[in-house]
Image 1: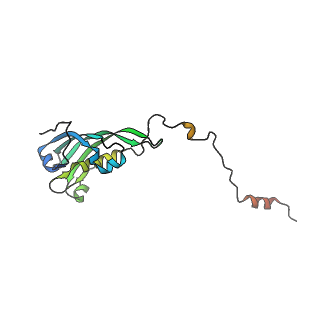
Image 2: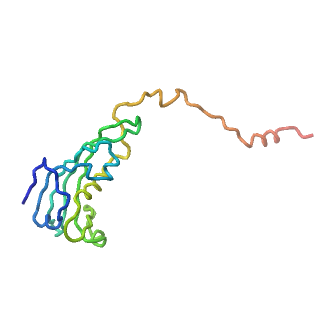
Image 3: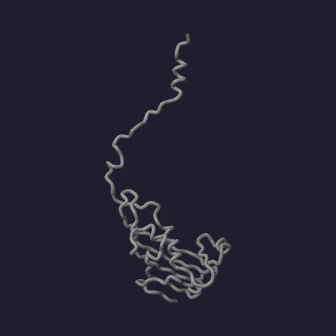
Amino acid sequence: MFTTPSDKILPRQVDPRRFAQQGIKIDGLVPIKEMPRLLEATLDSAAKLQVHLEFAVNEEKKKVVKGQASGELSLVCQRCLEPVSVPIEASISLAVVWDEEGADALPSYLDPWIHGEGQADLYEMLEEEMLLSLPAVAYHNESCIDASLLSSGKPVVAVKKNPFNVLEQLKSSPKS
């Protein structure tokens, strides 16, 4: 079993099937700047993700990847539009499969990592997992906007004209 040091940058290309057969564990960092879609959602291109992955063959003879990826990303607060630091974490539980048919045959506790023969892009897989872990809305935990700016005080109740008022007046008027 082989383990990489945790302060090193992880390789981008790996052979997940070979890693699973050999039971390789990898720990290290992945720079956000190498993940273009995740970079679009963040404000800090210097951020790095801490990643721990274990490749193995499970009891069902499936080649699996399990682990964690975590980091602190600078996102835009949706209240004040200023940067906010948000911790994100992804639990990874994937099975390496050849195609969609193999993905359909997986048990519900495993997600597919569809890949053909040879080297796979580890960063692309991690980027997908981290994008799924991003919060729907990022905001500061403390109040970042003056509450008086959010409302004018008393609620305004608009009186709507009822189009049937005219009919009611005609009905109640004396007939001549």
